[in-house]
Structures are given as structure tokens and as C-alpha cells.
Length: 139
Image (cartoon, rainbow, N blue to C red):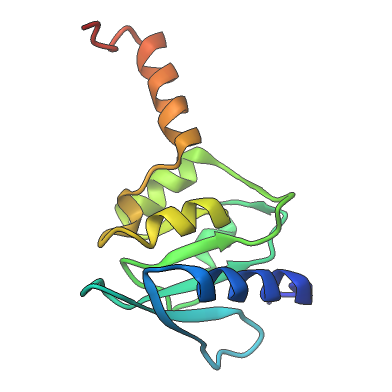
């Protein structure tokens, strides 16, 4: 059950209204949850975004996500102070579901497959991990 502060909802809706790949957004009528259906432009699929109020979004939160979410959708970690585990992001990606904060959502909305979007922070972590594992190709 979500207990999001009204300012988070207002902020989210303002960002959706400004995004050039969003043609329309509608909150779905799901009791005690904040799930939005986002219609996108340029032939991109319609997606659903679940706004989570979890402070530390973990496996239990992911497994307990609303059943309305399906492959291609996005779980928005809506509170700016919240955190989530990178391994969980990878698990969700296998299900075709993306997890992240507002910056990642804004970038992911541009892609047909939102779960394939990597934020600059994720790219940097991946680069560091590859370097530490000695797999970084030197050109």
C-alpha cells in the first residue's frame, strides 16, 4: 500500500507532462496503489509505471509488486531518499521490468524496451566492475 506525499505525485505528473515521448498519462484505478498508464509517441508501446513508496526497495517489495505490472513496465522508486539493490534491478530486467528513480525513467521512456536503459550511474558502475575484473578492453 502506498502512502506517497502529494508533492511526489505532483512532481511525477509534471515530469510526464513535460516529456516529449509521453502523449498521455492516466492514473489507473487500483486501490491503495499509484500506477500510471503512459501512452508514448512515435509508435512506442504503452507502459505502466508503479510509484513505490518503499524506503529500501528489496526482493519482498519486488515480489509483492502489483499484478497489473507486466514485462515492459517500470517500477519508480519515487522517494528521492530511497534506495534499492543493483542485483534486484538485474533480476527485474530478466522479467522485462525496469527499476529506478525519476532520472532513469525519463531516459527509459525514450526506448522501446525500457528495461534495457542504463543510467549514467549504472554505466559507470558497470565500467568499474569490468575494469576490476580485468575485462575492460583497452583501445
